[in-house]
Length: 361
Image (cartoon, rainbow, N blue to C red; front, side):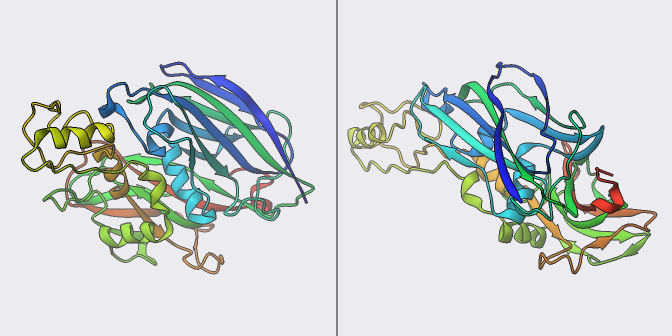
């Protein structure tokens, strides 16, 4: 097996509004697609600065790979990053992260066809030109960033003879309050786990969660997960995740005592222009405490939304849920509060190539 890394898209300018792109992927066995977004900080007002990779990646609303029209993976980049990072430990990385207006920023995130990169046993098999495609939908520029462009690279594994690949899709469902929600899961392949992203999650004084209690039902029989609480599912995700890529921002606190100019001097030194109530800090302003910097609540919140139901916790394929002969499989959800927007479930499937006839099922 010989890896071959090539450039698929050298430099695609992205408009500030919504666009759609489609690319034919190379024909040799595919292991990795690397997507890089570059942008400029748009933070002449310091409060507009956003420091996390998740903010950068929100420029892309959806990524899909299809084989002859059938989905191999489909999801928001931030969700897919959780899945691929959980197995490979390869999470998105940022370049030149700072808060200077109009400075260049970048983030690269991998899309993997196997649980590990560069694995000749677990990658997508060779295809004919045009059969395997990459589709990318962009969104409006996020707050604090503009001037986006995109680069795409691929890693093929020449002469590899893969036996399997992973498939990741997204199901969206608005959970109703109570023990009344069933999320239909795909059948036909081995299920390795579920990434969960809840619309409702414990925050402030509220203990509500979209996935408050969950069970796995195979042909109406509970298997592996008879009942699981959200806190435990969130802890399972945290055990596998690397959290720092979502927490590129940070907080500053200024306590100026009785001297307003001292508080102002501290604020200007670390480029803070306003206190938590957006009141301007000037030499004439009364001393303030709790002045905050570039960490935003949205970044903290994003960490609380994710959980993981692991069906193959030892990563040796000894477990997992075999759905080959199943008629029905559901993730049964008891929500402690109704969703305001959709929650998301991403099933991770292991597709055996012999069974799939060299393609996605």
